[in-house]
Length: 328
Image 1: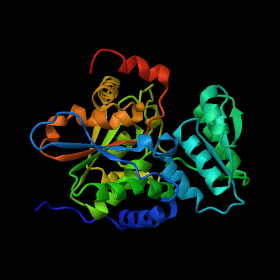
Image 2 (image 1 turned 180 degrees about the vertical axis):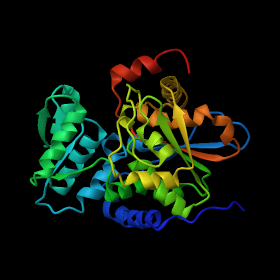
Image 3 (image 1 turned 45 degrees about the horizontal axis):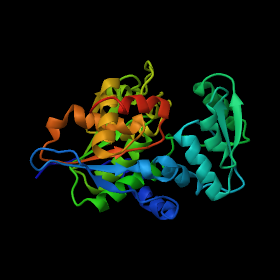
Image 4 (image 1 turned 135 degrees about the horizontal axis):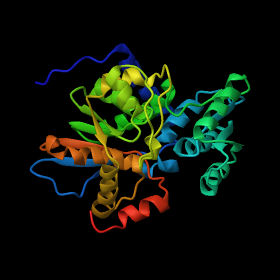
């Protein structure tokens, strides 16, 4: 029998919080399917795709947003900064919980992204500069005492929300050997990893990191938050740094068994293969997890593997040219 390490009290506490969270948000999120992959694999190798791209708002982020907002007083003014999945998820969650939410966006945000957020009735502030400056402005407004800042990952309740995916996986499949999860700020991999390591400790957590923006992977390697260079990546939902003092890092360090770094070519290949072989068009951050599996596929033969497809909110002008090229 394979030996395993008993999870720390912090990991077990987060897993326990996830059980409470599922009861809190279950009526507001979708139980997403765990699809058997169509890809032909050798021997008894099994591959499943946990399709969070079918989730409300098109990504897993709604779980963490609802987990956080449902625990906050209704009269609290909320603020965050994101033109992507987190901003959309918080807007949907605030509409559900009847909170007043403001989202700070860079002034050059695309009209389509802006409309996805304002359609929920969310207030917006267009701030000069890039998304990093928009986030700084949101945080400064929160520090003034007028708002409560909603982090996309650096929050125990947000992590617990994302961890509900792990609970679903353990109920959908009787055995799992490996789960491949894309890494950004660490909320997703820490949340799911805590649940898996607590209730299925022999299952391995494989973190997928984009080489062009791998702050969490680099921070894990040295055991503390470090700054890294950030280049454009198809996995833009995973791009960016990690907060100093982030609650996700120590948990990620504990629950992740292996990190696989993927190039832009790897991610593009995965996007194309998902489209042509699996009939699934997803965002680059979701394809990142599949790219990690494909790049080391021979290591995971004769095992039961799960790819977490974290979202399907893609920019058509970016994804279409990739998946339309002959052939995967």
